[in-house]
Length: 96
Figure 1: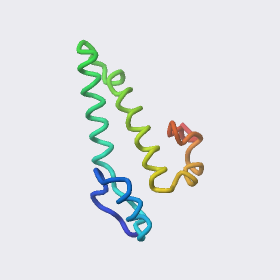
Figure 2: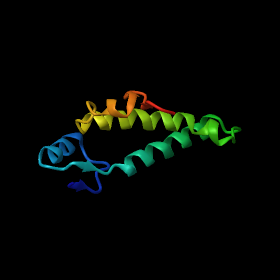
Figure 3: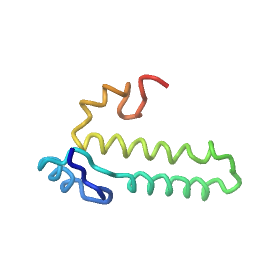
Figure 4: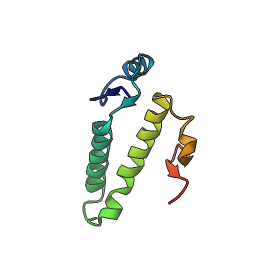
């Protein structure tokens, strides 16, 4: 397995090119963490009196799910998502 470390914040065309040239794993943790951070920040700004963690993470979680689904498509792995997911757009697992 050839891994692209530091795959976050790279243009889609460069990711596609890397995959076409043999990269089989792309690390995008920072992309996902940044979305979560900004999602939490937005919720705190929009609802300053809210303090329950479960209510603060909802928007951040949905933002991450959307981005992850887009990355799965970018990586050309959406055809494999059906192995693990009922709905790739919502990242709904078969079992939960």
